[in-house]
Figure 1 (tube, rainbow, N blue to C red):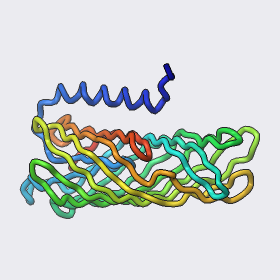
Figure 2: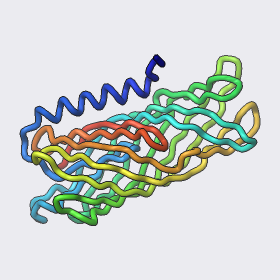
Figure 3: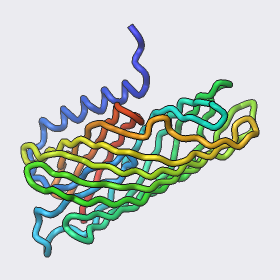
Figure 4: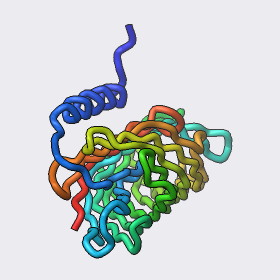
Amino acid sequence: MRTPTILQQQLLILTTGLLSAATLASWKAQACGVSGVDGAAFCSLSEHKEESRPRWAVSGGGVLTSTTLRFSGGLRGDETRNAAFGAIACFPTARTTLQMALGSTFAGSLNMPDGRYEFSPGPTALLGASWQVVDRDVFVLLTSALSFSATRTQRPSNSSAGYEAFDLRLGAEVGTTLLKVIKPYIPARVFGGPVYWHYLGTAVTGTDIHHYQLGAGIVLQLANRLNLFAEVIPIGERAVSFGLALTL
């Protein structure tokens, strides 16, 4: 039997934790929280009265990704990256969300034909927006996010090299509310953007071999304005994201 990979173990632990937490929920839910893979929380607040609904939210958490990149010259490399983030979102209307997230890559690697390149810590940033087009028994959100990350690759026998990535994502998220406190949803996204790197002294440009994501997510209300959100993406660019969001 093949030993599970680290990402598969993380997916199993996260899924088990979410199912356990869901059985303990008993608070009345706000319609808040759908998370993107980049970690920033989207909130839908149209069920609240306009004069009393929250106008802001803050969130924090982590993102783990695993994918394969195709570089110029026919090169391919398997990439894993972990990042932590903090985000702030505003709700100009009951159906729209604008958000900004800042964070840092803190671990990861790129496996190339000549060996493994480790990522050093580096900044990440995201700007996003969402629009809730349906808010009934089933909700539908359209989402977008523009992100940037910068890091450096390290190998003991070579000097470090800069590694920058840009990314634009467009998607839709469809879900419902269960027991008034649990919001499962299905995200589907398409994305694209270049990666700039120096490999063995030569400038190369890369991109993901997968330009799509399909998975599942959940939002669980822990208290009146506090929500846990998590997402598992097994199809396309694989990812796990999780965190807490507090509406203000």
